[in-house]
Image (cartoon, rainbow, N blue to C red; front, side, top):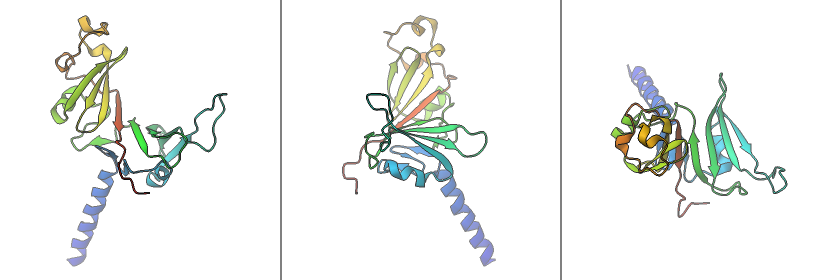
Length: 194
């Protein structure tokens, strides 16, 4: 009986850790947080394929010692990009994460919001801070996550769909509109320990 209890406890602990691996929260995405340095990403995302993209110099050549962006792909079939990570400083491997574009539904907030979630779900579970309009998208700032989600502008009613100057209100966005882009911004830590 003692061994059965121990086995159940171990299963519960490992399942909690697995769930946390894909949680979106303020200044945190799974194992990554605002104190994570760019050079630490590979060790924290060992089960995925991490590709560091070098920025280009003025002549179009790559700067081999610098990291301009980190692309993360899932290692299992079908292989697809799941994250795009931008550093605060492109020429510094000790730089921290500035932002992450989430490209996979495996990453979710504690309330289940992910890329592909509906606007109704977003309104229900998160604080909408601001709504901005671009040529092709409606960009919504989520204050409690320090994140942005976007919806295709095509979901707007006809009278405001093509009016780039229109003041878009949350009531104009249909509840069934789906998130097509999800960015998580990381605030720089004031006293990051080196």
